[in-house]
Length: 88
Image (cartoon, rainbow, N blue to C red; front, top):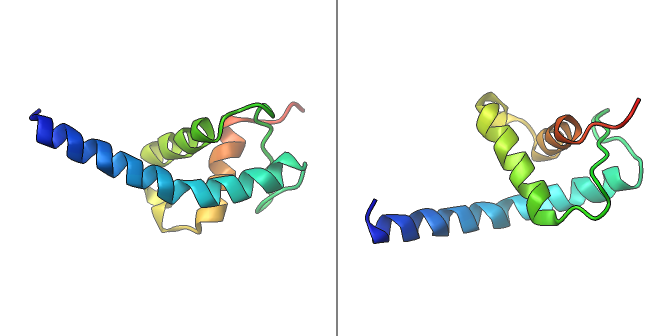
């Protein structure tokens, strides 16, 4: 891949990261307090970096592209719940 192509990909990833930050951060804050979002519960480590949470959601969306038409908060909650399940 050309250098320019690499830079464009990096810019797109950076823009995507910014786009994910708000819904992921908002849903995480609710889930971190032990609350459910759309009946989903997640238990990520309390010291987990926001970037790791964003990448978890993006990775989940890459595996579930049909979910892109759903509400961002519901998708984020489901992605975090499946990535960071709570102990029974």
